[in-house]
Structures are given as C-alpha cells and as structure tokens.
Image (cartoon, rainbow, N blue to C red):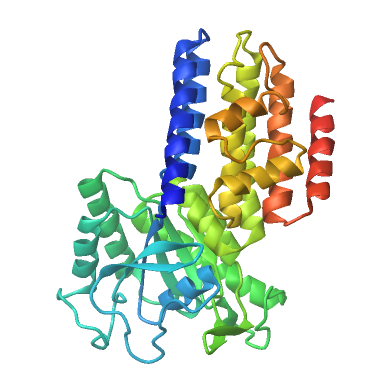
Length: 411
C-alpha cells in the first residue's frame, strides 16, 4: 500500500469513528442507532476492510476449474490441462490483475485417473483440500460438473463436498454457501447450436434438465436447496490476448457470489469482473441501503450539522461506487465527482472536512431536515455516481441524472 493510500485509509477510519461517536452522543431511538451503526459498519467493510474473495473450486478432472477462473477475470490467469490432471498440491493461490484479486483453493480434481503434473503432499484430493481449508476459511464453495456428466456417478463427489462443508463448520464455525456449476453447456446437444445464448429449444431443454438433475442430487446429499448455475467458460487466447469469447452466464455466477460473499469481499470481485451490470447491481444495493438509513437520520428531530452523519455516509457511498468501478482510491477521485455535481471543496481538505463542507450543498444535510429529502438526495447521488464512474458518462450527464432523480424522489 502506498503512503498516499495509507493516509486515505487513516482519514476514512477517522471519518467513520466520528460518525459512530456522533451517533452514540445523540439522543435517538435505540433501534435507529442500531440501524445506523450497522450501515456504517457495512460501509467500513467495503472501504477499509476490503479483501479478496476466498473461493474453493472443486470438481472432477476436466470439469473446467481453470477455464472458470479465466472466465471470471476475462483474461488468461490459470493454465488449462487438456489431457492430464494439471493441479497438484491443494494450495491457496491469488489470481490478480491491476484491479484486484481472488484467493482460490487450487485443488486436484476429484476422481482423478492420472497423477497430476504437479507434486502432491496428501494421498487423496479430499485430504489436500482439508489441509488447505484448515489454513484459511473459504467464503464460498463451487462444485463443478460437466454438463455431459451430471447423470454419471457423482454421488461420491457430492458426499465429499458434504464432508468438506461439515469440516468447515467444525473448524471455522461457518456455514459455507455452496453452488453447483454445470460447465461446458455448449457441448450439450445439439452441438450445432454452440454460441450463446443457446436459444435452440432442444438445447434449452437439455440445459434445464442438467440443472434440475444436479439440483436434485445436491439436495438429496446436502439436505438443503442449493443454487445451480449453467455456464460456458470457453475462451481462446493468442499471446495472452482474448481472440474468441464464448462465455455464457458468468454474470449470473458473479451475481450469486456478490449475494453470498461477506461485504469485505464484494467490492474487489465486482471491480475485477469488469462487468458493468454486476458493478451497478452492487452499487445500487449499497445506495438503497444507505438511502434508507440516511432517511431515518434525516427524520430524527435533532441537530446534526456539527458532524454531518448523513453527508459522511453519502461520501462513503460515493467512494465505494468509485472503487467498484475500478477508479483509484484517492481524494482526487472524490473531488472530480463533487465538481461534476457543482460542489467545490479545496483539494487540501481531509475527508472529515469535506464531509462538513458537503453539509452546505448536498440534499439531506442541515439541522432538522426531512427524512424523505435525505433519502431522495442519497439515492440521487448514488445514481449520479453510477453514471459518472461505472457508465463513464460526462459531468453534465451525471449532473442531469442527479437533478432528475432528486426531483423524482421529492415528488
């Protein structure tokens, strides 16, 4: 982390501490205080405690683990073994680019028939996975199965999946979410319909049938409903450049991960995915949540202008959306957006001073204000930030969206 980033994190910590202190000192209903603190803690997770997601990907050899990693990044990150088992020792690896990374437990395929290319420590794949899980608690587990093999003998593999789930619960006291991933659906009949969105009626029937069958098998063994997502992760690269892209439903997988991952792991995943629909979904989730809480604060008949709780949360929300988009984490990023909204704040200001200054400009600030205005102002800022940072719209377009959403909210 650079010195500039360290200073920014220190400023964010001070800002959040100030907000929490002001909430504690203010007379308001206990449930309102609790909701505000919960939201502030969530924003802290996004901005200060952000970390790579920790994902275990398990499945038989050839199920497409490496291809799926590449598909999430949209670039060549993991080597792909076409003939022999490629992955050896069960070990956590960080796959990353300039936008962030993912910690993935790289495992030997279940039910392997060949020795892997890499050296191994344990006698079986399941033992290797267990050793790595003891080292670090995963956030989510993906069970991969080729579309053509869903009807094959995978019951033993699912039993091992259940064994891993129970071990994580025992060692880390964490009920890990599990998703079934039907891979290589492009190879299901009719093969002539090989390009997404796979709209041939027979192809759709075969994809739906494999999803249903894997759902039934997982429920039978895990004794609870489990999400199953059909995907195609096929891409071709030349000199590490993407030259052919047949990915299908990877965005649905990313939506699932954003829903199941802890807050501190969501921002980096959304950022590195480069999928604007995924980024906007997370940004709006944060915006709606922040708007609901700022509305509560605004409806509380107390003076809050000395340390603007509302504007502090709005500032945190804007910065989180900037991070999701892939913007660099610095004060200049914030200034650019505030300038687009017609708000001028000196570049030498700290975040806390910026927050105080925003109280003069941003809807929702003041002594005794309307909860409706506070909520509407926050959500208008959210939509303007999405337009500016994620959709890369101009300052004028972002400002127009802010004005339009604010007027709609007030009505």
